[in-house]
Structure formats: structure tokens, C-alpha cells
Amino acid sequence: MRDTESKGIFTKGLEGLAQGDTLLALGFFEKVRQMDNSPVVDSYYAFCIAKERGQVSKAISLCEESIKREPNNSLHYLNLGRIHLLKNNKTEAIRIFREGLNFEENQQIVEELKRLEIRKPSVFRFLKRSNPINKYFGIILKKLRLR
Image 1: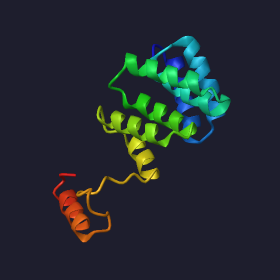
Image 2: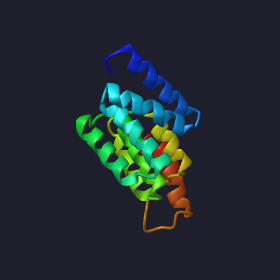
Image 3: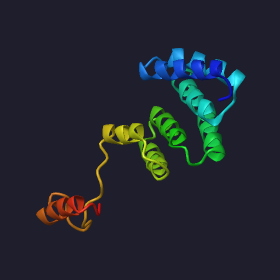
């Protein structure tokens, strides 16, 4: 972002999102987009239009464009994953969240994955998850940080 005015408006948009008021945030992000069209602004704007206006396909293309411009920024993956959750595409959202974590540790993505209650696959897939061998090997591997 170029100037302090656009940074201030962007911050107000982030505060609106943090409070759960995506409509308020949408207004701020629209203003910032007119002043400074950066990938981060586009990504947050995309999430807001998907949630408030139902423009999911436009939002997905905006987020994908942001990822092309800044592929290592996990915020784009966070917003794209949230858009897919709005679309009830949980599998794709999880894939995107995990892809974002490959680039940097993002606590918001971790919280989204925890909220979705993602379980790792069992150690021995040919055994049932409830099998004690699977259970204890899973615990051991987790303590050794191999899983």
C-alpha cells in the first residue's frame, strides 16, 4: 500500500472482518481498491463479495489472481479457502488451507483447520482407526514429531 490514508482504510476493513462485520469491511476494501490495487486488498475484497453479495465465481478468480501475483502469501490461501467453505466445498477448502501452510505458518489457517476438525489418516490404513496398534503408533509418532 502506498500511502497512509489507504493503510488506515485497509486497517478499518480488517477490524470490520475481525468483528464479523463483512458488509462494513466490504465498504472499506472497495475504497482501498480504488486507491491502491494490491493483491492483499483484492484477496480480502474477494472474500467479502463472496460472503455479502454471493459473487463466488468472481471472488475465486480474484483470489487466484492474487495467488499468481504473490504465491508465497498465505493470506490469499486463507481467503480462497474461506470462499470455498461458503460454497460448501469443504474438501477443496482443506486442500487450499494446507497449501497455504506450505508457504508460511498462518495461525488463522490453523484455526480454520482445527474448526473443521481435520484428522490425519491412520498410521496403518489397512487397520481400523480404533485398532490399538494404530492408536499407539500415532501417539508415538506425534511425540517424536514425525507426524
